[in-house]
Image (cartoon, rainbow, N blue to C red):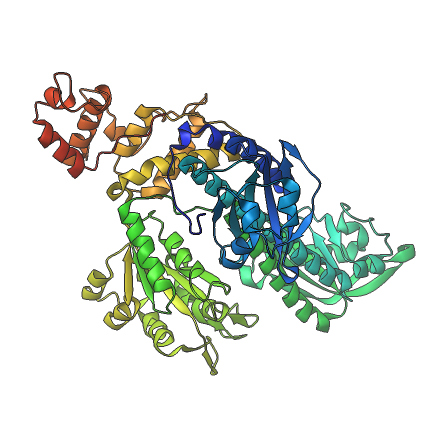
Length: 638
């Protein structure tokens, strides 16, 4: 029996089982994803049963999302976890493996007896905070000895199942928020009408339909001008034109004197109206609120808040769909994760340093997920993207009327992060005059909103990141020394990709699988020449640049093999044809590329008459030393 996880590696492009499960699930979502997963996983591991479940915590029961027996899906069912091998998975969030004699270990489990089980392997499915959502397991009527490749495959697709389950739950939350927003709009006493750029009706709430005497589905798609008298159309047109001249945060007007609208029986009536302009996903809309102007202000605030929360949930779904895992097994990366794990349990301030594209935000999220604050908010703020005159408001919020455009009270990012974590990306870009106020929050947990006199307290864990040398900024007078020392309590440096080249092959396979699935393409092999080129490149843009290169290669590749485009920037210098020397390439990079090419040509034979050492005119021991020094790794076979 294995109680604790043992991590194994396998060559993903050589593992037929992995390829089968990946191809089976790449284009599926929801219930069909889980069905294909258990069918493919059972076939790949050659087990009689495979199942994936959702945990119902109050009942301490598991509900099957998909259950496969002998290659066929079975009817869903529920079981209690007590007295079963599932109990340790759920209660302790542990991987378990019982290679034989499962009935002797769990004699009270009627389900195991019914299945005639002999062996069992299972792993928990968790959310980003570590809470157990369910589990993935395989059961067989024969012993199930430990097999490194099978264990690695099993864990990879347990992670995929957990990500899909998280995505489904986030979608459910999004639908709940959208239903809540719809219920709020529908229950409003004021009539609310949404118009597109052509002044056509996009939607109306019941109160608006009542005002105009329309049936439940009537009016949608019609020109709103048909609901107004001729004089009121001109009046509203003039106000809509005025909206375009106002600042973006003040595009709302009250229609003085109201308008003459056309109600039931084509009879005109006077309606007090406010009109506002907003944009969503690149399209412009108008919102008209009719009557009850006093109640309108509170209704708009609630609607705006719910829209922001809805958009936040949409962003969470996009993040889950494109979730970038921390991929790699290099010593340098393990050192980073070890440091992150050590500091996660504390409330100490963390400063993450590294070049652009190395994954500093991923490390920050890793610290948050493994901290006691994991269930609270993770608020990200890119300090380099803020308008200089709005930086303080973004940090600490503002009161209504604090400055031009402050039409209502607003919470800042530190208030939103209260009880959780705030991630200050590109912290070196914070204006010098605001750094003293940031220092006060870090030291005392206190601040005031812009335009406010009330001192507010927050409990926030700060993680900062920068791709610059802050100590040099301190010397240059652009960054406060006391703030630097307060941020630099626990520094973590994320190494550039060129210093952990052994992580390039797993990253390439990871990106290729996800991007190809999203594009509906199949990339089955990565030729050795392609991998050699990718490993040899120095990647000034790091993991972000590598991902973009893989995406571009998938677009240009016409078959199942991945080939790099000829115009590949950043790699072209490493693969320039003879007679055209590369520009801006270090001597070590040239030596690394040349040795890699000779090793590839000799099949990685070092010694002997036809070995690489003889071709390079080097002693074999000297060649081995240079291979180690230049971090040349034998590429995965395509």
